[in-house]
Image (cartoon, rainbow, N blue to C red; front, side):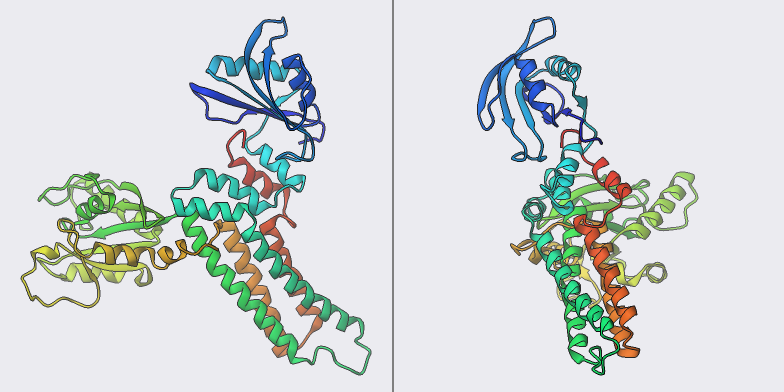
Length: 444
């Protein structure tokens, strides 16, 4: 991107509609808009204008808004044309605006310019995309909090804590020849521990926010005819999968997206786990294991009418215990007063018994988190950066306890600050910016 570029894009979804919005941004935005409309544009006013082709033919008429720099989304001169939403009309207007000196914008380029011009930090820019693409009301509200700067504020407070620590430690290094050892001070230990605690708290919030943004992946696993497809249908709320009494009905992975108490969840119903002779079923079992390996949570279903078999126990030994929840299915077929195992949740897809308990176990603290009006959305890169920052702060604390080397502590804290700066964009490579904004829609 160069500072002299003026960009244009369709800011509304392509296709036939009542209205379409064309967005211009850059140093020539006003000039291009005035030439196309053959009229003067006043900042901060909504004006009804006609838009003309180069030969003078009328292309369309609609509303025109001019935002003078720096009072615009991007911080540059911006012009928006609200026109009729026919694809041909939009194409002719885009072609006309490009002929007048604009170029088509890259994906996310408007948000990128807003970031580069200091109108947004990186977390706020990403929140725009998250708000548009949010998969639940809770995610939408959390994205708006991020856009309002809630996440950024917490990161800036952490950075200030680290800067204060660095200033004290580096000042102590400057006075190393003095008789007083400034680093022989338990206040430093306390401040490092407090900083680590704050980082840990925000990391927990960010991980929960990442769950809201990306959702959870749940794999339904178990022997054939264990009730996996029936449970999928119960959670999805409709007949997403074929259910029969015959074993091996599901051979491929069935995927459904649902919202459980505001948390987006991807449920993958897999083929029954057994040694199969048919090539199609063998491939289904292979794919089932692939989904199990990728899942955040594995619901292992056991048919209560036959109980946990040796095969069930052998399969459970192969599964990652920390991600597995035992689910005893078809509990409506149990006799009254029958003893129930304590190592799982009993459910009935037919009557709905146990489904609320199962949903609570799937989303964990997600439902409570959704009610927290301080919740914000986070991405995997935010979580990774917070983890690395926490590692360096803990390393600085360990150094203080072992050697009290000011040089090493200062370097660790510099690294922690750098990783936190990556979150808001204060220390960010061009490659990372390119990857982030390339994932945005054109016109965003």
